[in-house]
Length: 238
View 1: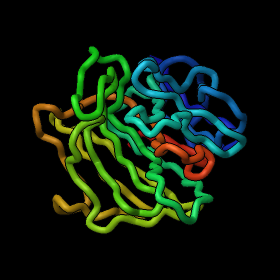
View 2: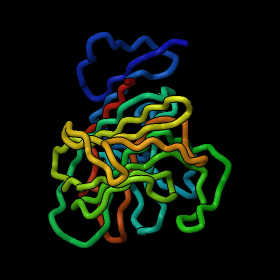
View 3: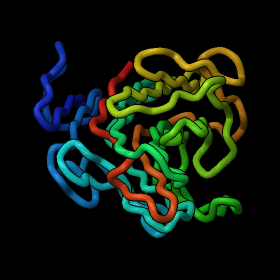
View 4: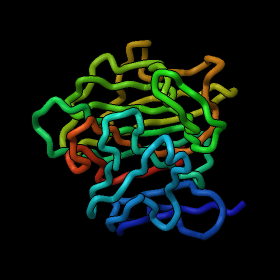
């Protein structure tokens, strides 16, 4: 199978990565150069389960956010199906222009994610065809979770960072012997977890051992998609 790298929005191609066309992605990088709703970038991003989840959008150049506004459990989430590796890092530069308020707003990095599973009822969080791991963080550091999508958290940071505009939020996803390991980084530093160490390996029968990278957003009712968002995203095979 051919393998390729893709650059969107004027980034330089890293050494050894070239766009050769066809096949699956080994590298993807975008600074969201052009407004569009839903987020697509020539079909790279996707969300099939739109009855139960909402889509992401490029609000304006360099500003990618969500579309939900009702405050329900219908997070705006999209992923990259053509990135079919099981060992990768998702790096996102955070945008923030909110300084006060009580609205819960999250940015999310998704790993091991798919949107085409059999419909399931999560009871607490409603129906979905999506599954994977969601790593989310509140705009003011009120909480941060690593968990299975629409399920219980499997770990949390010992100390939650307080996001600032321009911060670098990263998550790694690696699979060994069928067991996925997830780690979180903030501005290049590994984040210690309440479960011990700086990574969590999921060995539960509900573990998700394959799936692609993605991004997501949650906005409580009354919040604006342009207040807490991503400025750029890079996905790299590791």
